[in-house]
Image 1: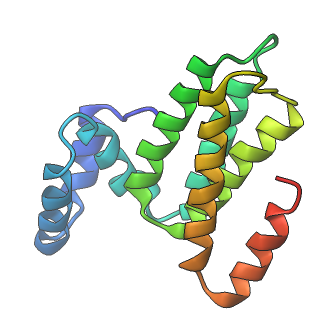
Image 2: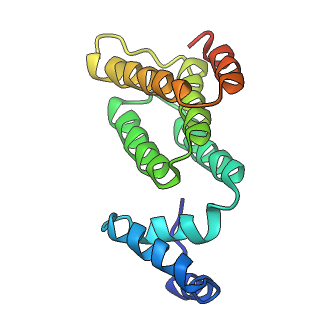
Image 3: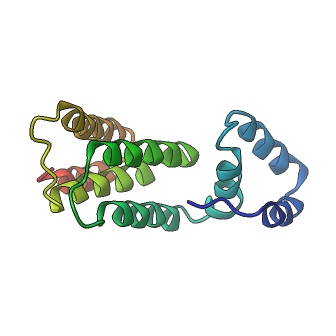
Length: 152
């Protein structure tokens, strides 16, 4: 996700009432380095969680669709970026959609980990995070996500 310009953020902040502005500022204080990206999410993306999840999946596709071999550095970079972006949202359904999409792309690209235990552990960690997040969603959705996990 690209951060918006300061002028665009200012225009969005003017539209908020006092209580909403206070909530945004308190949440912003927790994230120092990513504050501009967090503010972009809160002001421009938070009201469309499905669109945000699709945007994250598209960015994962762009990185993993580069021709050639995918190295562990690339996977690490994607996982760090994905974790940061999902932390902004905090929505378990968004997290599940993005993490499952990431794991599917690894399977579709047939990225083999070979002797690289680091990459294999990264993938296993994503599966563990998916399992934890599935436990926290509605039981009807749990079945759907378990079905999506088949083959991963």
